[in-house]
Structure formats: C-alpha cells, structure tokens
Image (cartoon, rainbow, N blue to C red):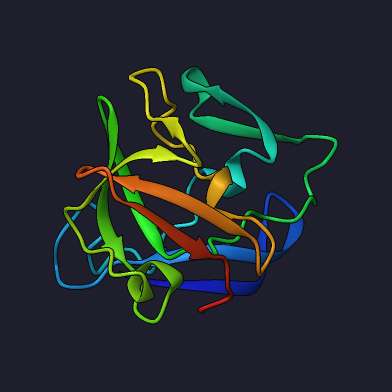
Length: 155
C-alpha cells in the first residue's frame, strides 16, 4: 500500500483540495485490482448528503455546509483495524513516525494517550492520527509498553 495527497479532485461538480488517497499494491485486498487506481473512500462521500434512488438507478449529491473543510492527513503512518479491545496494525508506512518507533504489521494498540480501546471504539476512527506536525501521541502496545509518536509529514 502507498499513500499520497492529491492536489485536487473533482467530484459532484466540486473541486476538493489536498485529498488523501491510498493505493493498493501486492495483489492483495479488495482494492488490489487493475480496475481501480486508488481509494478515496468516505473522505469524499462524507462531504455530501447522499441520496440513492434505486428505482431509477440514480445517485444525488447535496454538498454539506463545510464540504470544503481540510481533510484529515495521517501524520503517524498506520493503517489499523479494530478488533474487540485493541487496534491491530495492518500496515506501517515506510519512513513514517510509526516505522521509526518500531511498529510492525500485526502489532496491537490497546490504549491511545492512556485511554483503553473499548469494544464500542468506532472501527473507522482515525482523527487521532491527524494532529498538527510536532504534536505527540502515546500508544500502549499489547505488552503494556508505552511508545510516543511525534506527528510528521512523511508523504
């Protein structure tokens, strides 16, 4: 997987700036197909009130008030998946703060800044990874070790 920030992207008649995108590689996963160039995901669709008219095979997009707010930019270098009471590291971006701190795919995060990961933790929550450059987050691994990450632009 590789990550990038697109300068701009046009969708639904609107131009979005600084759009985060992921690109699958290695032939694994749902997005690793020659039919898809990359994944913008809910980052774009969340900027609209989406109406699906199945009977007419149409989709309507109504921009929300803050459709042009800045996108969350991952500044730690993880792709994570929630499982019960931990977040499992699925991918660590090369040269990212997570890579420099020694995190590897398969590692488990049990707490963020001392707050345990609970079963109700939203599975797609990533806002904590998007702090300002230079800010710090402390992660607790499955062995109870605490590791600090300093947010940085790495892609």
